[in-house]
Length: 73
Image (cartoon, rainbow, N blue to C red; front, side, top):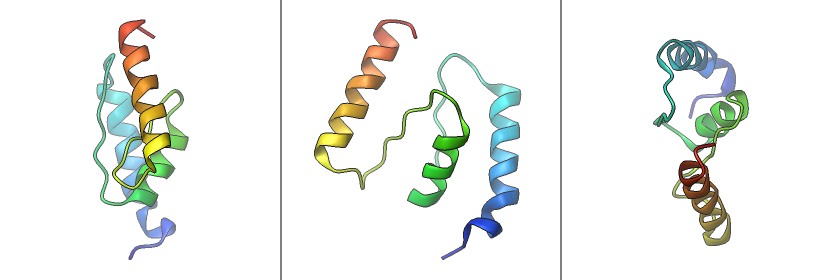
């Protein structure tokens, strides 16, 4: 498994691409849970969804995502 230093160039490229092409709604797919956590922290207002979240956290995040879309946040 790669450590975070090895992922740094990839993360920087992802953030640059995100900033260049961002629209109102974006979905970023990552290779690992750790990578998704790092990107989620780097992008203000992002919502993290992944298959390893416990049921309560996943439901909370899905509710937040649905509210954000509904209320046009």
